[in-house]
Length: 592
Image (cartoon, rainbow, N blue to C red; front, side):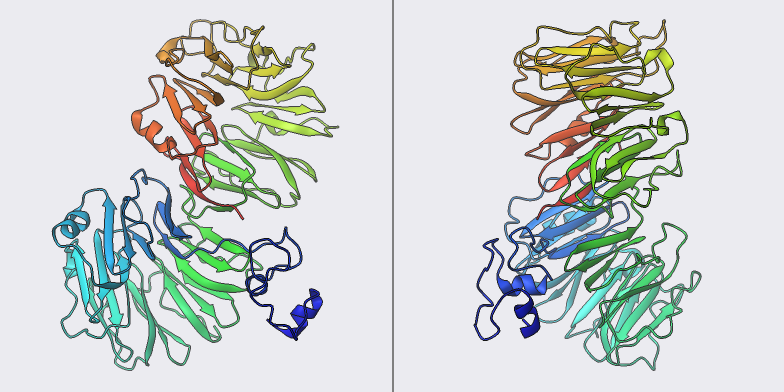
């Protein structure tokens, strides 16, 4: 700790107080100094550090405080129970995972040769673990300094050269790999772009990183050399990078970290703007690259950019609430709004407006989102009247949205805007105490006081029939698709109270078949052909013909506290991640 920092925070430079905790928040003065937080303010605490991070094409994994968490697409494989103190994590970017615990390696997931080969020949002498992204191969540096590989055999990626000994560091990507002994770099595997041909005049290696078809080395003069495929300028190292202290590579790009904590990236930018380093990023201590994305660790948490269609770049801190659309998910904390998802149906669905300050409430529709903040209402996404919120909103406490309309509770009154198909904007005037607002495709419901649920809109199947004389209702949900007189799927509603869950409306696709034994339900979701309930014990149960067992498995991640969704795309939140069904993906959640 510097004397100036101690004085500025009321500490005594002459006192040995580095290990003391001035504000009693559980972090020592030294930890607060390293994190640039205030050691005298109990609310100013360091971010939880990420001990290891593996970014993949469609999913990512992190190691935090001795626990492995994976999120994104195709990660519904349980973490092995024997991983009680892992120190390193790696995965192929989709559905194969490995972790190192001490010198032992454990792999799990889809039963490829990477999994079965390790089962046949366990590894217990590893000091470093590497899993090739976009392939089925893993390698370790052993206690003796050799490299041992298993799994996929394409291009001989599982057969490192016998001459490579006393290995200090290695890297691999898809079908080629490189390692160095502190003096010499050797590469093996695929070489059609000469990515494995090490330049004879290469300087002393400090670190080698491998991309899809290119290789880069950080030399001991803190400068970078790259070779191999240059179709996307991935080997054209920028001039004036400064003193580089770290590298990582994606499929067709590379990023460098300097001794000033600054990041520069070069190469392919066509997939997801992966070389566009966020403006203002500084103080970076660790750098990670996936095939088409990057994450930089700072004292204030991780910052990620690039491909995020499944949430593989979504590391969300202190999440307060979220909402789910047809192919996107948005959430917020006290400072920021965050989104992930796909833009194939609506290019603007992830274009969060600038100028949102102090977000308080969020509502997400099929292809749009709205946030109430200290700066007022902000809506974005697919153009239409559902974005045109009324003037004069002053105190929004809830927002919910659907395809073509949005509703909110403002100063204790329900207000709706958008397209008035089937009367979804015709809010009953005698709703007095609204809460737990739920919008359906063509009808809406809200709890009113302590005994009623009020609904309005399409009522061809009785889905908008209100319910009275309830016993402590806690949540309500509306589902279905566009309502028409002769449609069987035009909507249903559900409410949970002390008596359990009751549903009414269209019985198509089994959405009214509430399972017996549901108790203490705290949250509900209703969609087209799907209904789900969350019990207080953190268990999610679903019914309806358009919800599969794999969907339900994706939601039961343990300790679930909230569920939200759109049709069969449903997300479940617990203390460590957001896990979504229906191909949505998920997010890593870190709470300080």
